[in-house]
Length: 475
Ligand SMILES: *[C@@H]1O[C@H](CO)[C@@H](O)[C@H](O)[C@H]1NC(C)=O
Ligand SMILES: *[C@@H]1O[C@H](CO)[C@@H](O)[C@H](O)[C@H]1NC(C)=O
Image 1 (cartoon, helix red, strand yellow):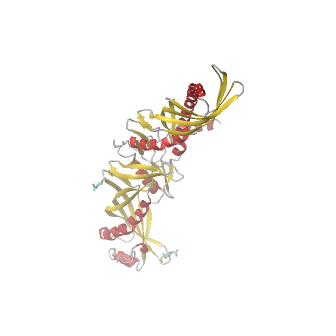
Image 2: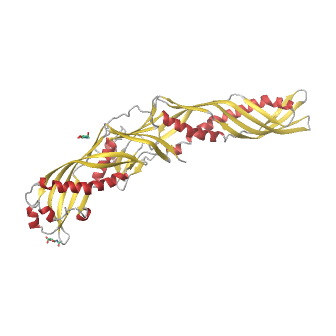
Image 3: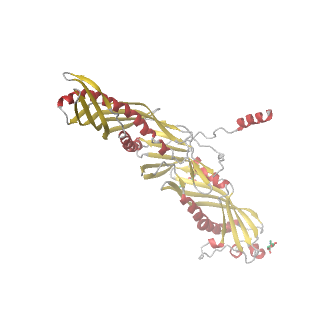
């Protein structure tokens, strides 16, 4: 019993606290992005305000000289809501201020009166409430799953003038109602506006919940985009810090390195900027390397038919004399694999991958047994072009440089240098195209709902790449 309590305590102490607090990916929403959000949001708020339900109003009032008049206003419903003027302003440190001005609501209803015991009259009326102003502050926070969540505070609505038109009935009745309706309806409307605006804002949350906090990349990897903290609001943007780390699917082992601090440039021409740090990309290399995915068997059928160079002991025998004696007339197989996690670095306009690997050559015996011939060490550097394709970041590499040294030989000494051309060819026409086919599939960007990117540009800067883009939401 005591032992298990101690054990629990020990485990609690040893349990890693959230090991990465610096974001690997940063997202900046600019005023231009907010403006687009405002346009979409206004449609929502307008729809909401159209659902205002005005309760029936009835009562009695003494009117001289006829005495008590019983009245009722029923069947009132909103005909139109106009929100011609609205703005979203950033409030540094707090959130976003939504202001709506000059709005109007028009409604239609029936009136009915009874007086002098038996006289009844009825008709309809139109009411237009104008000069409506609505203001509220929208707060954006991270929910428990690392997705953004909005809420609103300090909502206030004021109603300007009311303009009422009666249809049917005598004009003295209109005067009876005018003041009354003005007050009663204005306050009935005013009371309902803020709760509906608050509702319209929290209706955004199901959309925000669609943020792909864990996005599948392929059979090996997924990328985590949960927010590491609530966003910060400055005077020109809202900035989100996302974890931005690749994990092996189902096995979330933190990479043995952490994100460095980086900050996005003060650009504001696009709606959205996404900065992907070298940490994120290097975490991908860590996952694929750990999963053993960075290895490839190369067989002769993968070499183009027209090539004079074949994967057999005859071709290689020209450079390794013992080979044709020890293993005459056999086909060969090469295993190319990384020896450690490749390192990716971002310099302005330059993504370079440094990879250390090995090439193990085998002779294929007639009974299919593989006899190891030699192991070469490879130091390669490749240049990578990165680009956005749909909602994914993809890449393509070209070989910069390759240094080959001998690791082990099972077939005596030979000049490694003499194999340079063959190895270069194998890397260029087999390994790189295979790698590029994978890289072309890319990995998903953070997205919300049915989001499409337009006017997208990707720039490689020091230690991160910057994607500037506008977005479009399709229903
Ligand atoms: C790209 O950066 C690497 C180092 O990260 C450097 O060795 C290489 O020369 C650079 N290439 C160009 C074209 O600037
Ligand atoms: C396959 O052939 C090689 C060479 O002839 C021999 O050394 C090896 O023992 C054979 N292996 C099997 C499993 O038959």
